Image (cartoon, rainbow, N blue to C red):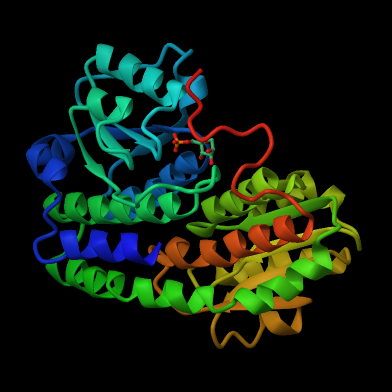
Length: 346
Ligand code: F1P
């Protein structure tokens, strides 16, 4: 993860010079909206991009499951840009979705890991994540690399569209350069997370909650647990909890809440209170130095502070570690989970 991010940052730092973006800069600046198509973890990276592109570039964004989008009759114009995200670059649904959008005049931008892959070849322009081969089936470093590329993209386009000032752009660049060290710090939580995994390894259900930028992170945490440990897990926007999942909460339900300090922090604290009132077992991912949530949660995992737009790069790491340790303790093969394929080509 760290090498891929450092590579990415070194490559892009100085001039924010993403070849594929530069060539299509006008299209991005004039775009009416951006549609993102992807599957699985790549779809979650797309959801993070929705927050980034709306926040930093003020472009309307829609994030679509490629597997649904390809069978719809979507309204697409020549002023739309479609971003196809895929680690393998071979996912059949993502390829079909981008081909449908292309046939209706959209410009297609690809974010793939595998150079020369089918999706990369079918796009008009793009950026490679250069994250190296994913050894396991479940995407982990690919997510980090995709979100890094999408962050840089939102910054470049936001700056060009006048939505991001020179000063803010520079601040974000400086902060992005601190992310590899923060990820490294999050990885040091390994032993602590292994102990938490030991306690919850026999649970049959998990709930993951997050708001704002941490909502897609909650979805990704739940997906990783499902994929490699075969435990049923649901990711939910924390505020949606009261519209259904709250009925599931009792003293047997582990609830992982991503509750870092950001603009929705106070609201997440009240969601934690709601879970606690129903005796849910709270595992909270918080910002270092938080003094409120540790008094409420059964377990607290502290990650380094960073601005909310960059937090998914850091807050996803303890969730990946938690899934990993639970899967290992349950005797699951984390690299080759049952029923999953690295590239879903049919
Ligand atoms: C998409 C994906 C992965 C998942 C698994 C199956 O792949 O859903 O996110 O972990 O490997 O495929 P891709 O389009 O990003 O290659």
